[in-house]
Length: 332
Image (cartoon, rainbow, N blue to C red; front, side, top):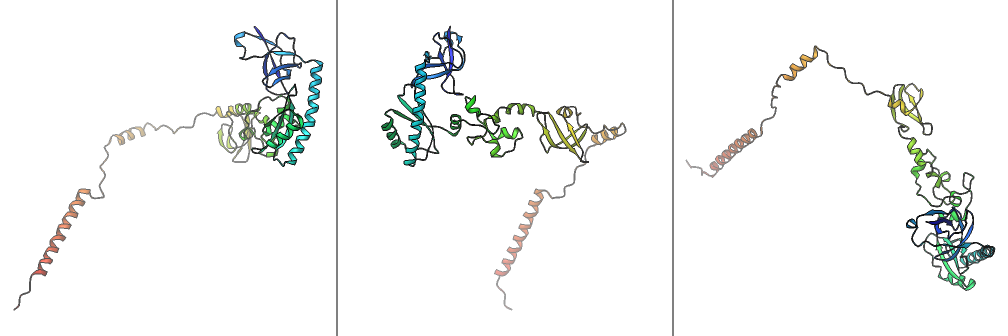
């Protein structure tokens, strides 16, 4: 058995598995871990849990130690350097007139590398900017371009609901969001109402989307003409959460119905069965053979014969006239 603990490097970011290495850890503790970028400080997200050795992730790394007082002081010095570096980089961006927005500067734990997060509409040639930064701070420089949703996650803020942004407080992954989710919940398609701080659709539109899809089953759409035992009319309002809908009848009355009222509606009325006197007459009419219909038009064979005869007559007339014209006139 091996004890696995999940850690995160920043709030509401992806969780990573590490071997607890027998340390007594609890959520919120700060620890020093070994990563591909070197040693970093992380925050314990879950308590250690035992799993079989065969279920352990590949290339599992162990936690180096709990963060000491000196480690916390080093992290505080890095945060101070990040502010200074952020100001310097912004000035250089303005001097070189680069079309980019600096979002955050982050130093690794040992200070051997600085990571610059920025947003831009396209590709940016920042080679000269990197030279200025390396010459000023004498460390490795990494420029990392991010999207607008990642920018909102890093910067944080308050949403239109008055609460802290979901992406910066608890949402670890971004799920796809579409306008269909807003339509399904009968929300006004106003960009200022359904867009977040990042300018994209609100992530919370997907929280209740599946619930609305499930509750809308069996409910008719607005504008549809329905008929049930209580009345017949056009659907003018649908209450998804209440599982009912309102129809307006021909005499301008409004009735509130439920999907069960549509299910209780019986099958469509059928035509009345023929009486005993009509049945023998129908049977005789069906048994009598149908008289052949008269042909109004001549058959194709007759047309061919008639056309052939006419052509022969015309040919004989033409030959007779031609013979008369060729015969010389006799003198008296």
